[in-house]
Each structure stands twice: as C-alpha cells, then as structure tokens.
Image 1 (cartoon, one colour):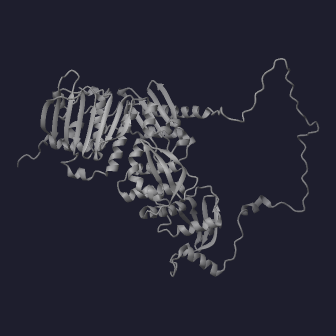
Image 2 (cartoon, helix red, strand yellow; image 1 turned 90 degrees about the horizontal axis):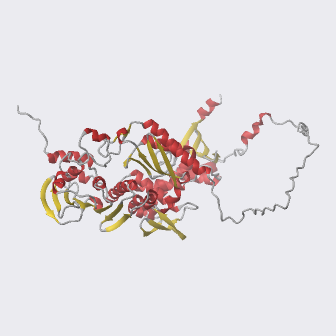
Image 3 (cartoon, one colour; image 1 turned 90 degrees about the vertical axis):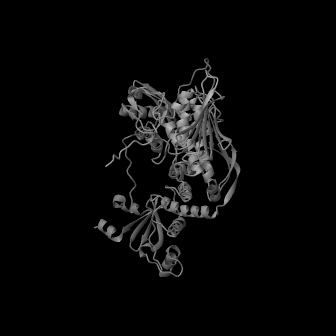
Length: 611
C-alpha cells in the first residue's frame, strides 16, 4: 500500500493560513497599515473600492524595500522583525510572524511597488494567487505601495460569506480608528471610491481622539496618568455623566497595540460603578506601557489577545488610577465667573472697627421641659395599621355589563369569545412603587412592568412604521447638530432610510457632522441626537447584516429610549391604555429582547401566604 501522507503545496498552505489571518477586507487593511508603521512611515494613504472587495491599496512614505526583500516578503515566515526565539519576548514591532503578506497573496491579486531612499529605481512585483507573474525595475516614489485586488477571488466560499458593503466598510473604519488612536503622530488619509472620507493630520493624543470621535468629546475627557515599577498607564476616560446605555468608545492599548481584555475592562467598570447606572457604559482610551518581557502577544493570529505576567497587580493599579482621576474631577466644583447675582464683597477699611456679632438668647428656655400633649376624646389606632391602606380606593361593585364591555375592548376581537379567562380583567388597575401595574384577574393577581410593557407596545408600532414608511416628521425650528465618530458615520448610510421611516430627517453638514432637521412627532423633551447615536451604537453592537435584524435593533433601541420610565405616576386612563395595547400585541408576555413583562400570582398562592 503506498504512503498517503504528503506535504501540501505552499499555495494551499497559504490559503489555509489565510483563513485565520485574513478574515475580511478589514484584516487586509490592518496588516498592510501595520507593515507601513513598522517601515517608519509618517503619512499613510488608504484607497478602498467597493468596501475592499475590488481594491485595497495602502501607500506609505516609509523606508521601502530592495528588489530581493520585496520578493522575500511573500515567502512564508519571512520577516525582518525577529531573528531568534528570544526576540518574541522583546517585541517592539506590530508584525513578526511573516504570515500576513503570503496569506494575502494566496487569496488575491497583489501588486507591490517599493523603493529605498538610496536606490534610483524601485521594484514592481505582481503575484496572482501565490504565483509570481512579474518582477521588474520601475521608476516610483520612495516608500511602498501595495495594491490588493479581488480579495478571495479563488476561494468562492469565503467571498460568498462576506457581509454587505456597509458592514465591511464599518469594519475597515474600526481597524483604522484603532491604529490611528495609538499613532497620533502619523497622518492618515482614507479614500473610498475616489472620494476622501477621512483625513487625520498629525496631532496630540487628545486632538486625535477629537478628530475621530467629534468635537463634543473634548469636554468629556478626564486625563489619567500613573507610573509604577510595573509600567505606565495614561490616557483618558469619559466623565460619568456622558456614559451611554448603548455602544461606547472603549479602547485598551498595550505597547502601542490594540487589545481586548475583559479583565482590565472590569477594573475600569469597578472604578465607575458608584457613578453610573448598571446598564450604562463609560468611554475610555487607556494606554499601558509595560516591559515587553512581561507580556505574550503570540497567542492569537490577530494579536488582540495578550497575556500579562503581573495581571492582578496591573488590575489594581488600573482601577485605583481611574478611580483617583474620577475623584479629582468630582472634587473640583465648577465656578461660574459670569453670574449676575454674585454677592458684593465690601472694601476693607482699616479705620473702621468691626462690630461684635449679637446673639439673642432665650433665658427662659428649658431643654428638659416636655410639654404634655393635648387630651383627645379617642385613643390613637394601634400600630398605625390604617396607613397601610392609604392611597387605595374601596373596590367598587361591578355591573356585569360594564365588566363585559371592558373585557371586550381589551382582550377580545369582535364576535369572538375569550379563550383565556386568566386575562379577563376587572376595570381597576393600581400602580405599585411607580413601577408596576397591579390588576385583578379571575385566577389571581397580575403584575405588569410598566416600562417593559410600553417597550413592547412601542416596538410593535415602530416596526410597523419602518415596514410601511408611516412615520410622521415634525420639523424643528432650530436644527440640532449631530457629531458622529468616523465609525458611526460609516454606519449611518445603512440606517438612514429606516431612520427617515421613523420620522427623523437628517442633512449632511460635511465630514462627520449632520443636522437633525426633523424628529418623530410622538417624541417630546428627548435629545434627538442622543437617540440617533444610541440607535447607531446598538446597530454596531449587533453587527448584523440582515435587514430585518437591523430594523428590529433600531426599533428596539428607539422603543427603550422613548418608553414610559420607572418612577412616573400613571393615571387610571394611562394604565388602562397600556394594558389594552399590551394585550393587542401578538407577544404581550415578553419584550422583544426576551425579558418578562407579566407575572401572575394565583389565588392559591395568596391564600397560602396568609395561612
């Protein structure tokens, strides 16, 4: 029997490796831009067509490569970053494995132009699916230009599973955002379909954050800075009052490398816990500088997972640093120097003597005297039990025809009989703790969460508006300016039609700024810009590419923001309306995200509790 185990050809091995390293067009952008950073570039230009499906081109003004180096760069595990195993524990470059370029070349058509400063001519290399097609000398600018065309052209299954252009474009923005945040001293330009959509000139860290997140962020940032023997922590956290219920900008960087670290995230959340609600998320941009010997980045191909030698100690330092910065911010009161009602301070005159303050004393006051209470003709009620019933009206007798009328309106379709006797309500509803609606049913006591019930009602209404484009817009007299981050602005086009269906009207002001010209007619006293940012953030968190799921996420976000809040006192008419509209829904017992709206306490349970 012949031997059956054999070595795979390099082209097949590279395609397999590409499955881990190159997952989507954004992965190509990340790898090429990181190579430009390692080459010492000061200006990096990124050109995209069709969200990276047709073309991804990265041009830098870095050191460039010789003809031999250009060709060697596409061999597996060929790299200039490390020479031996010990170098893995003292990494200062973004790349080191030599996997990215061979993996990209295996699933695309790639063209590289590169020239060093000391060379008169540069080198052109053309590779098609790992196969070298051309290598020649050319005249080109100093630096390197890499063009990646038709990604996954020879792997149809991978190309078929790419997301929509909006989703892939959003992922590209996210990668550029992470790289730009950690390299504020480098200029970045993004051109999409021959239109410049992002330009980030060189700046300081705070200015770079503002460039990406919008001008409004500048007033929200609190600086953090701490240096210990284990490393240095610096960056910014957002003020607690600007924490969001939806997506927030949260970034960790270690030695200029973006990472995901749930453990360190928990440290930041612990510092914020006393200052924000449980469902709110603070923004932060935190940079850790540690000895490369104490971390291991060689865990995952994307290099976003890092192991730390002193993880617990760093957790404590991070938590204390953030908490201390928040404490300093909260301890300094704001002073308004423009106030009109400031007290007058008299001018000091040394020739005038200051009068002694006078204190009036009641000489007949006896602190031990206890006046006898007035006599009454009745004794007070024992234990104050009557107060238990304050606010509750005596239950009225119901006429049968009134009960039938209410039941028919709330829970029956015309001409049908109720199949659910447990939902046949009496007309009285009571509000408990300004949070729940209590109502008596034939089988016991029904408890309805007023906020969740309204979310269910509004979600159904907004989904109907989105599907049938029935939203009513109310024009605003003074349009509100909406400042979006680069990633949020990239997500907006895919949501714009559905936002307009809800009743929002937006106009583009340039860059990442928009004017809110109109809002849904049913919202009052709500921040329209915050609503839109929350909807965009939820959509980005969901990451769905299915239109129906995007619409559901949008409707749910809008419903949660506009629903009746806890703590609001409801009238009998409002409670009746909520109950009737809730049971008109196809799924009244749960919110769209699966939370219970209704709970029942049976008569038997009540009787057991009172035995």
